[in-house]
Amino acid sequence: MKPNAFTLPFTIFIALITIAIVSGSASIFKTQVQYEKMIQNYYLASTELNLAFMQAQKTSNFTEEYGTSKIKCGSVKSSRKEYKCQIVLENGYELSKKIFLEKNNEP
Image (cartoon, rainbow, N blue to C red; front, side, top):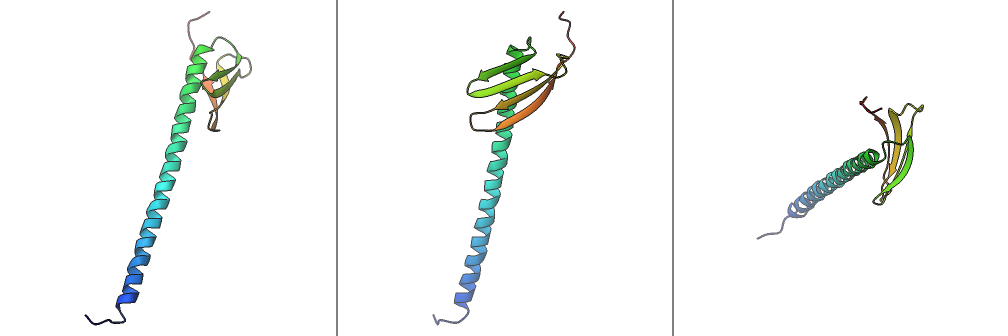
């Protein structure tokens, strides 16, 4: 086989296209993993907040540790129907959420 001047530029071109495709795929994968972590943190914090809130619903203000998470809740305008809560997970994720209670038949 005779060497020619076309083989080297063609190989470099194919290598650059391959590098661009691999870099783009890695970037997309990294972004997807970050979004999935954010969604998991949100749902974990929300679930732990709801569970802790069900346990301490009779008080207007409470601070509680649920597992390794720290939860602070306080009623807004002392209405006992609206609570402003903040939860901090052990990995540093922080969620602030307002919870509205339905009207119930308890005295």
